[in-house]
Image (cartoon, rainbow, N blue to C red; front, side, top):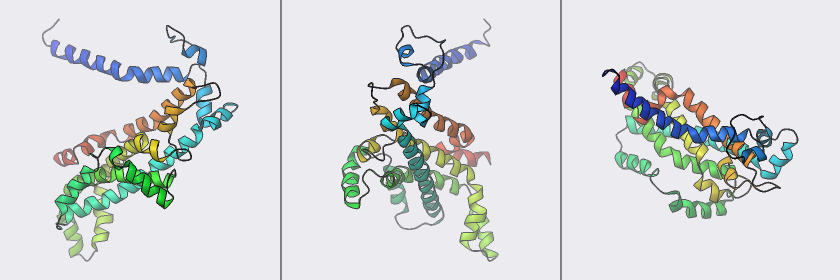
Length: 286
C-alpha cells in the first residue's frame, strides 16, 4: 500500500462505518414499511420480498386501508403535522427576521439582554414550561388545538430564528440603507427592496432549522395535544389498530415523517452551514 494513500484509507473506513451506523436503522425502517405483518417478523430478515404497500395506503387513507387509517388517526395526524409545522415555521421566521433586523441595526437599551433571553429559550427543558402552557391553554380554550401548538412552535423557534437572522443582517453593510435614505426612500422600502433580498439564504437556512424542530417536536405535543391535534410523531408512538400494534403502518408513517425533512435539507443544504454559523461563514466568502 502506498504511503500517500494511507491518510485517505483510514478516514474512508471511519466514514463508511459511520454511514452504516447512521443509515442502517433508516434502511431497516424503509424495508420494514414495505413488508406485510408475517414478513416483518421473519428471522433472519429477508432483503428480497414482494413489496406490500398496505402501510402507506393506511397512512394516506387510500383504498380499503383508509378505514384502518381512520381508526388509527394517521391521516388526521399527518394533516396536523403539516399545518402546525408550516404555519409555525412561517410565523417564527417572520417574527425572527424582524427581531433580528432590529437587534442588528438599532442599539437600544437592553439589546444584549434580549438576545441572551432569546437564545436561552432554546435551553429551557420543555417540562419546565409544560404546566404553564397547559394551564394557560385550558383557560383560553386552546388545549388540544392546532392554534395552541402553533403558538408553542413559535416559542420554540423564535429565539433561534432571531439569532440566525441577526447574524445575516450584520453581514449586510449599513451604507446600502444609508444611501437609500439619503435619496429619499423610507427605511421600510430599503429593508424590503434592498436588505431582505440580500439575506434570502439566511431566511432559507432559518426556515430549514425551524421546520425540522417543529416537525420533530414531541414533548409539547404529547401533553398539549391529547386527541384532536395529535401530530404524526405522537401518533406513531401510540398507534394501535384492531389487531394490536400495526407495525407496518407505523414503519410507513415513520418513512413519511422522514421524507419532508430529507427533502427540505437537500433543498437548503448550501445555506445550512451558513445558518449554523449565524451567517459568519457567508460573510467570509463575500
